[in-house]
Length: 206
Image 1: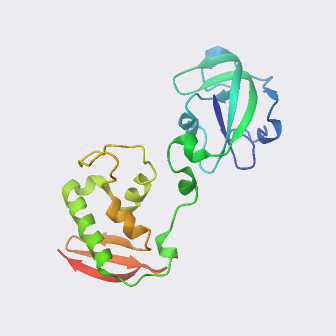
Image 2: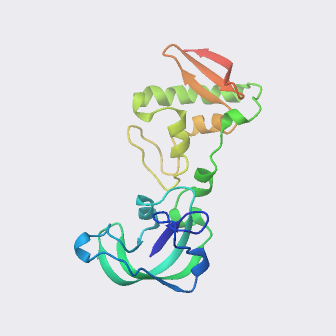
C-alpha cells in the first residue's frame, strides 16, 4: 500500500499527521467514521496503486510504503483504515509512478531559456510537427499537451495517430521545446517563438 503526503511530510487532507516523522511506527485515527460512510469517510487512507493516491493528493508530494491495519472500507482505488504502519519513504518517484514525476514537479519553461539562433534542424522539426498536427487535427492540442505527454514513456499507443512502439509521435515538438522554442500556428503560417517575450524567431508559410 502507498500513501502520498505533502512535501513537509504532513497528510494532504488534514495537515496534522506527519508521516515523515513516523517511519517505522504505527499511526492511528481514533475519530474514524463507521464503514457505512464508505471509503471517503474519516480514517487513514492508502492505495495499492501509487497513482491512485492522486485522487486526494497533488504534485509536489512525498511517497511512503504503508500497511493498512483494521480496514474499515475500500474500493478499487483506495481503502480506509483505523491505523497505518509506515514502513519507509520511497525516494525514486519516477520509478514508483512509472512516469517522469521529477520533470512534472519541475517543468521546463522554454521561454526562460535564451532564444537560440534558428538552424535548419529547427526548421525540419517544425515541418515534422506541422505534419503531425495536420494528421490529427485539433485533437492533439497545443505544444503544452505534447510536452505533458512526453512525461509518460510507458504509453505505447496514442489516440488519433499511429506510431511504432517506443516512438513518441509528438517528439518534433519536444525537440523544439527543449531547445527553448515554442511553435504556434495561426491558420496560415507556422511560427517559432523564443525568449521571455515569446518573440517570433522564424515564420514558415505552409
